[in-house]
Image 1 (cartoon, helix red, strand yellow):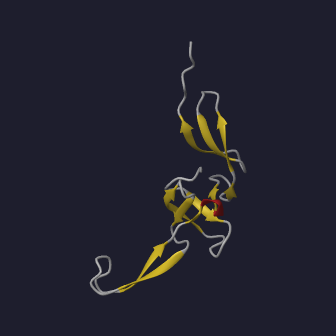
Image 2: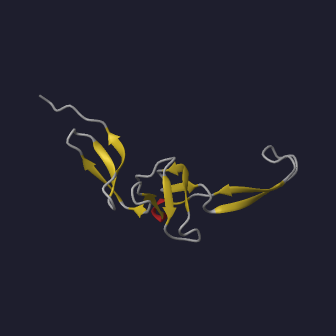
Image 3: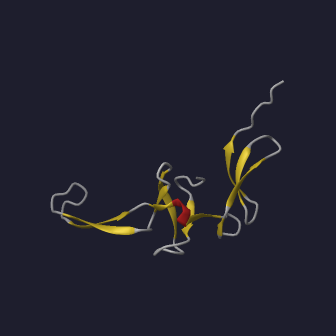
Length: 114
């Protein structure tokens, strides 16, 4: 999974299709991500609850499958597939297939054995 906390993603399927948001958390083992403002539900709480002393309804985001979101390309500002490529210096980087722009460095340069 190439999605990390803090990435900007767009939902590509489901009820929140087309919604953009920031990734709040990632569950790599379960293949799920929590995106800000996506898959919101209400949780009803009684008076005296630590998060809401007056009681009422709290908003919370539930996880969605990571296959239902795509990273946003920094150049074209559109959803894009991503790939991994090796640079001339020997570092691996994550890049946007739509524009070829580098998203982030995955590993640092490794020294070759002499």
